[in-house]
Length: 486
Image (cartoon, rainbow, N blue to C red; front, top):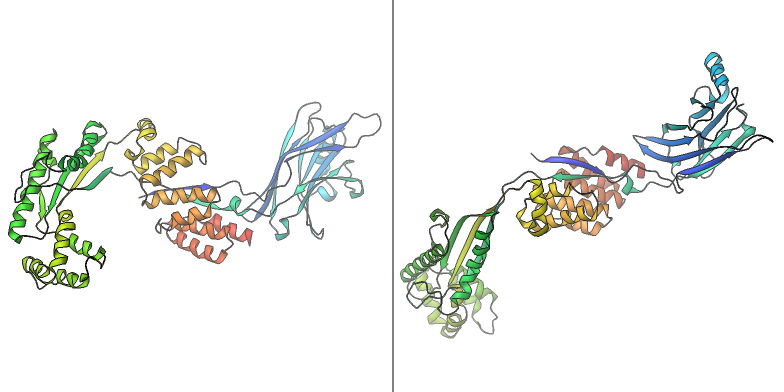
């Protein structure tokens, strides 16, 4: 059963347009030392239907008399100034004032919504502030201010105000959640197919390596096997050769030639390598290559085969045996038969070969080294494991994921993971192209839904997310993203 890993593009920012650090200067009376407070690392996020403010109040230079307090209250103000929402007040108290609050309670506007911290005289001090309020539509684009009660009296006419910033509208890329697929471990069994056009002496089946172009054709097989047998990471499972003959001459004669020529070629290859006998499958043969003839006639121009359709009808006539069929073409269309005999029949005499082999399984350290020179020897899971040693989203990480698709171009898991990277890079055209071939896994459907969210096709996105959820994927964050964006 495949594993799933959920990856989020970034924090769920409503975000700010300004640097998240503001220094607030408090006015001083004549003769007093300068006092100030800094608000650092502040950010506004939205999650689970809440607007959340977090900030660090740096109190190092703030002086508070023992019997006084300072109050700082974040306030959200709509762009048209018709809506205001006060968040929790931070009360910074002196020692005596803290005792008074504990004994008598807090009056006024701070009574029911505050956090309290006592100022440590002369010491560095930071207070981490957090408050969450129900998210309102007007929060998007609102201004964030900080009210500063400098006298500690709760009288708004004495409040100072500091502007922190304006909340941007949410970026869908900051809200979406993508699901990568952790590939399952799999056997690394491969098959390589090819065709060699070996020429035999007429009516003979002896394998003559130096006859005509045989040496060149044999190298198609031997060059591949040479590499395999020298590579300690490769083990050959099976070598299978299938011979084909052309339709001229009697069928039984062609059958005998095709079978013996396939066996002769198999025996020749067997002698070249010190491989177990069981690696070589029994040679197979097709006496007459009518499939190849049909394809060649279909692709031929009617200027050379004016009776092309009639010849195809004869080839496809199931009532005729091979010999009468070939004789009928020869008798009815002699000129065209001679063209086929000279230009098509030689290509019908061929030897197809299939080499089945395995790559070794690698440890992670071995896989990291193999990836540098022979990534095709890695399984999809081994390539994934190599990627996990790199920084997600880095060029090197993305390159491994691209290589996985290059090696496994039709694997839905590799396609989904690369599509997710393309989405993160805002290359939706590439992502859509990859997802066309990525199947209907929950992760693939979720990626299509994310694209629909970015393109503001919210109804389509909700339908797709419903399908992904039905397959067991948690899509709650993407559904929440739709609500926020709508």
